[in-house]
Length: 290
Image 1 (spheres, rainbow, N blue to C red):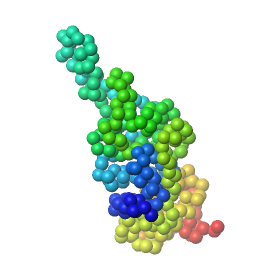
Image 2 (image 1 turned 30 degrees about the vertical axis):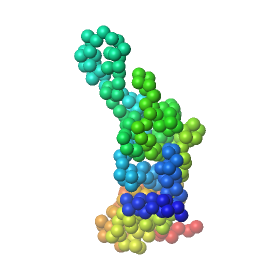
Image 3 (image 1 turned 30 degrees about the horizontal axis):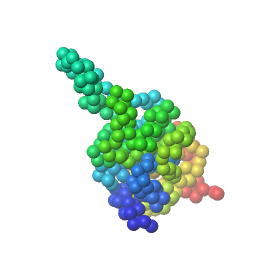
Image 4 (image 1 turned 90 degrees about the horizontal axis):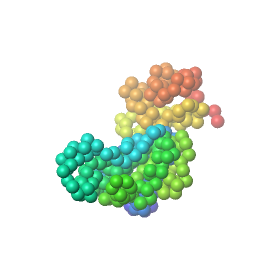
């Protein structure tokens, strides 16, 4: 294994994130090729935490843009501070030189920076997280292409603004819709899957050091078999941790049918899924018939 990748894995582990070698390699390439990375995978597999942990690892700012339908320039790139402009127009209204007046009232001093512009204006390279890009409109992807390709943004009144320092851009997607080829071509790509049983046990022990080994193994076995069921929303790593913390808090030594019925709300967030689990026994998930 490359020594730098190994050091990256160790640093992420110190920040409570367990990287496998493939994902660590992708993060290493993100840093060294100066290309954005698109992380796709099911909800709850830890995509967002990669960006948060990378920012902690680099001791730099995390700038997050949470995507949703209807995003536009004003909420993602910039907005004019019209009140400040109007005030300065009043102050400069005696100015006869129109070009000079334009220079005075159109400038970065009148720009309210939104996440994308903040990321290229930062003096130190920041981690820019464009979270759940699949929730945004397809038109929004067009806004991103210039930033993802050239690390610059064009503002009609000011021209092209190039990055002071190139941000480390991480896009995440839960695949609720297919992303454009134009966006994909500009990114490195990594599919983030649910962790293996052993890795998820390691994650639980890392986050909950005092949990009993057997209880941790039961939690992970139960969750992994639950993910194989036809659920509305399979539980992610966060739900595994919530349930493990709940069981430790309740001084549970083993998972019982009664314990499942009383705490399943820590794991599942849809009533049909909860009813499905309550109508089965613990052993059906701990020792399923293949």
